[in-house]
Length: 166
Image 1 (spheres, rainbow, N blue to C red):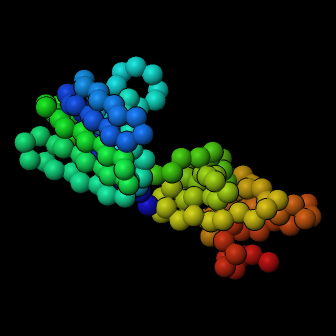
Image 2 (cartoon, helix red, strand yellow):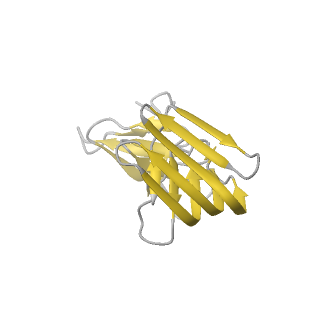
């Protein structure tokens, strides 16, 4: 399961009002992430030129050119596009270290992300217990097998409800 990220590319003025007021203008890429975080990237560096993380409210007006307004308490970010070259909404998912693969298998990818294993096909998240490792083998149900470090032979399916789980 994925969510979409909204991407706007073009010339804009971005005004941040908050802890330290800042205005930036240029040809940029503005990203609105699924959690409503707004990032305005220019061509220099890897950090955004202006941003507001997880605002309490977000409004996108497509009237006379897109205007993105994000507000969180005393912080406000307004991104007003003067000319838009591109807009699109690609699907995005979590990213992590690939796990649980078997030789030649590419149809159902799994990644380890923040203490869980995520099925990139469905978006299902499976919590990992402490001291467990994901094996490069699959259960008959298609999920990765894990090893719980209590004993070397304690292998089970990632899904505790699976019939193979002991």
